[in-house]
Length: 242
Image (cartoon, rainbow, N blue to C red; front, side):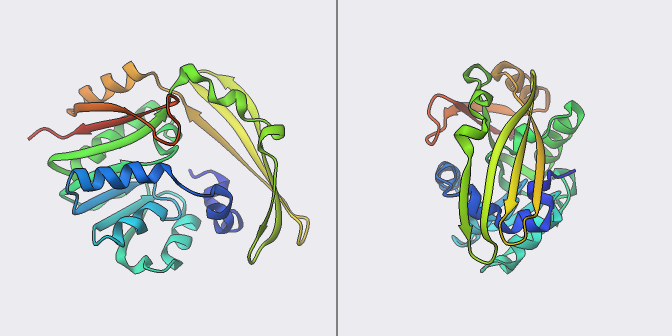
């Protein structure tokens, strides 16, 4: 199931503004060029920011996401008709011979159940052509990112076109490693409505992910640093063997 920040129509409509600039996507765009990708599967595409960037470059893109409200936002954007949008998880993707499958931002960590994670790796593998790449990122547990997830550090008042002023902040709810649970709160000044969205991320160790990739018939090419969060995240680059 999708978290409320992605699945609630009112929250999905303001997600892009609150999420801000996405410098992390520059790395993925460079890799799409590096691998000569002409067909891409974007797993957990959300409101379609990355999928639409790819489509604007003439790449054939399929975006899959379990949050229907986020897909509705994606479809409504300029160029939305260039992308094939699929409601569901990675297993819902149609048969493809993709050059590249991606999970940007928190997508890989949001797949918390071990069997769901294994199924995602299997499904992505099935959509890739031989030699096609899987790329995703995950935070390094050793950096303890959750210690910064406080109301004091995150509180914002944002004036959003069409929605008015919205207060937002995050609070940590539970740390039971490898799982970390937190809550976003949103207060809409226009009518006083308060909405919350609880999320859980799985902080996998690098060695665990490497073993998972090997077990699902991927070849690990490299583990790269994240340009937008240097020293804090791993970017895994693997491919389906020829």
